Length: 306
Length: 321
Image (cartoon, rainbow over all chains, first blue to last red; front, side, top):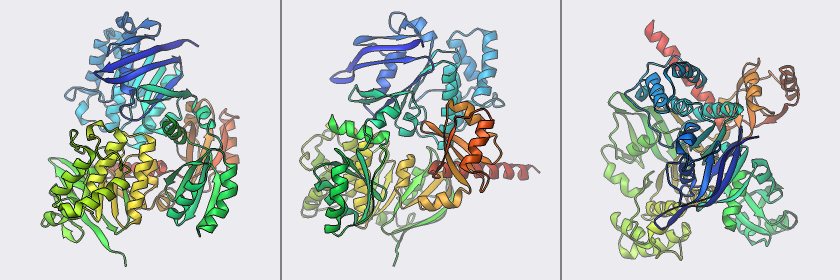
């Protein structure tokens, strides 16, 4: 399949801060690439470099075959971008906003009317054409933002934490739209702090301090830690924690609701040693078993190692 | 005996025409970790600010630690800790200086705050780093320092407003470890979040939407009482056509994405894994794999939001009649 985004060794510093420090990624048509990481990891800067909104210190990025700096017009014509704080014109209607963004993107008048009708239906805003943007609910604004980003039929869609702070129903609707867009062969890069959203990407890059620490399909990443997470439900929890921490093969102990999650070098040692050690400490054990690792477990173990 | 630390009755806050908090009532007992789950703009922060006496309610009443939030706000403040969403640290002061400064703001004397600052540093995991500048700390550590500041004057009740937004998963988990430690030591914690996984960790959970408190109960009780019917995980590709088929299938109440697969709620008794699998096969997806699943908090939220929407539509029709 066609590679639509190709970034090689991107670097960007702001003063002494190396915001993006050697990021490379490539995304094919129909693929969603997830950028996961905490605030300040370099996700937004990476997206802005791909959009050409920031100049690179070094490295190169191509979108649909066009260099985002040397051929910026051609690249932009093929790029849709939904920024974290995107702006709609509050005093313009839904239809007027869409038309405005279409005109900015150079979509011809006739094509635009047709495209607007299709998009409004697609995002579920048909019937709301005449409503002012500042009268929309958060979820509707999000959908109008997406429609505006798609107005010129881009091949590449970049989404910067598109669902931050919106309710689960809106998140659900929004992702269903994104997956439909993927089905049309668009390449998507999306940054997200939500691990459940990350799990639906074709590939993920975990970002930290300007670098992609590891990259892979969500299931591959989770499988890389198979057998290394053990769940312990026991009380009193404090004592259970102490005993678990003392085991030589237990690397980390974290509270997970009413249970503990132990990250282990390998499960056999702790599973054979802990029952006795816990009972010696008068801890009552309800459950001790290996559990499938989550993406969050993978991320935490990477951070601990770095 | 349980002791009530927050008692809210019919609380309302309007900003102009906009009702930010719409007749909310609840109570919180000492030692509870109560979560407040809802999207931005659902009234979480406004509720907290009224309980702190920072905002005047438009209607209703509220007591915190036995004091009225309007008439006795100044008696409440020394007894509670508050970590706001946009907390302020003095970037050019060290970790310790920040803690000491805020201890002073709360009127603590040096002989009281010296040992307390030590305790707090240990609790938030910043012992050994007390001389680093706050401005040089990474996101997760700044968050913990802000929590430490809210804790130094030994409040009985802590209000945390989305304390973990924007920090990495490790920092989020570490932060929750501290919250549990505090709760086990007897503090009461009222914490807002929009992360479902964090909401799972709360003893009781309030679900806010458009200013309304839609439900308040333990996560497991909410799952049992709000969602009638059975939950299923469906592994199938391509996702969207299978989802489209599920949504219109008889007996399916709701279906959506969950991680990299699909998740559906069916009406009580409507389906078994076999019948749902057979229905999907008939719809053209013989490879779809159906497994019984647990009801999620997202299912709870969705169900409550849908009910509320239906109610609003009914009210609207009635008003127009």
